[in-house]
Length: 446
Image (cartoon, rainbow, N blue to C red; front, top):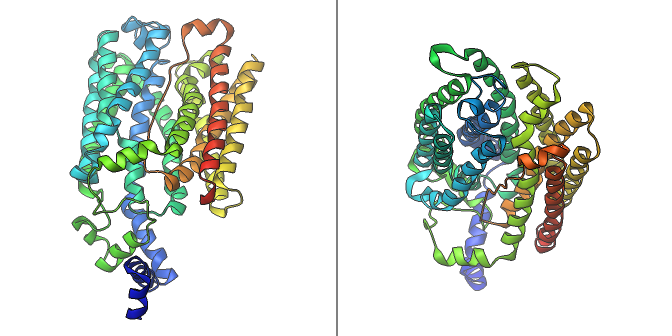
């Protein structure tokens, strides 16, 4: 056997030893180990992302708290609708600028320290939002919030790739984006309850939202420090996995997956990544996807409130059906992905096409029922699109990103924001085309 392995070369000997070791685990043992991984990392990753999304979404929710009353945030800070749109744009500008520098520290700091740092700092900055007295103060707070949260989502995905194979990433991605929509449900209920604190102890309802969520997030950072895991072969992992199980977790990963012993940063690898056409194709598809989908997400509370179906603060409860529909769609998309009925790129293209049709409703109708239906369907397809797209992307690339564009200006309000929705439709059309290109470039993976 030794002669045979040497004759085939060192690389093949390593591969054969790896396969031989993995074959010593029975299917029952493998499932048991995966369940341990789910309990150790996936649950905490979901909660971190839940808290993050609740905190990010509050900027859209507080805008419609106490509308046309003296305690409304736009009234108190003397802001126009266009000026308030910059609240989310500034957040994402700083998020994008500091995303790469932030993630360069992931290996140096270890995931537990990295996530604890992010969570505590963003909670602190979020609580400081309540002290804003003008739009400049709010803009500054949003900039530092983006800086504090920069790299959170890419770091979670990268960390999950240390534990799950690319063909298994559909499950953690489903949970993360399911949490994204669950945050819409829980966030709406939370803001609905806090709305009744308006005026208590001299604070407006929007100040109570920022203060309460910020303090809770800082407290949550302590829990992350205590229970969040690091890498499969890190010392902390020995408390939950035996050395043999740790070796199994890492050896079963695909070749492009990050490993515990990988260097913190490599300029050569970064340059090679920038030369990869697949990275640019996926990135442009995501830019278009986020432009269309996030455009609706950011403006959704305002759209729903303007429909006039419910008075304040019950208008917040109308945000629940779109989020709930997104959760259901995520489950269906994950089930389809797991059963492999369709290739990941084809499933992605189908969802993008359905999203384009849904956004066309905003252009074609002014009926309240049709608009609200489009809100529900648009949220649903935007949510489930992430399942096949990210499962496909993580199997093909190492690079990650999170862009957003600002398109809902007051100048578009006169025609019911038809121009804004047309931009969304165009962006989603671009997403469709770039996904077609990505499929061509990665066709061998399916």
